Length: 56
Image (cartoon, rainbow, N blue to C red):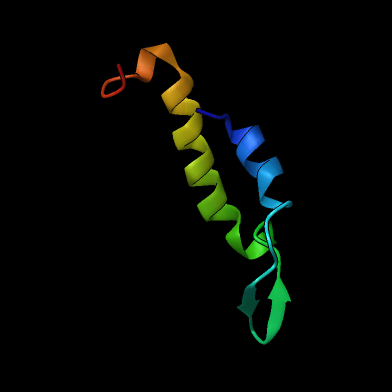
């Protein structure tokens, strides 16, 4: 499992194959900030022993 920071850093290494308003953008583009934040919090919660309710 990775952390929010690792997840965010990895996004910049992925292929730029997403188009937004006719422009090819990276997966770390600001338009995805809220989504990236939610996913990042999920990664951090999975790593937090106090929040591990489903992970064994």
